Image (tube, rainbow, N blue to C red; front, side, top):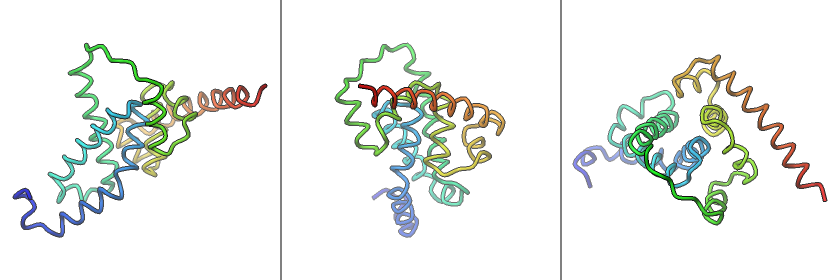
Length: 173
């Protein structure tokens, strides 16, 4: 057990409870934004590690889950800067289907979400999975409330059209 936790048994239990109750929600929010399952898991793990190391401070944050998601998304920016020149390997359809099954989100919706620009994916995922209002979403993403509303409006319009087209394609013989 790390020295950090020897005298903080209660805080350790609080963090463990927070982690167990928040991991899946945070993973869904980050996954909807970054799309890549393994990257999302790595980002969320890193964010929870940082939360653990600063748990006395994070536990007093008004929205600790939002802090974890924001930290994960910020970590992604740092990761992207380091890896942007690398050529990504293709993801097999099997791996994609397996990842979609695990997160308990409709695969058709995930396919459509993946086609949205990053910021639109974020303004859809963050409030839905973290149950945040426009102001909290704006603070989490570091943008204005008007920008959240504009991206959300565009994202919803695009999703509406694409989901209707997808449904019509599935129903047509």
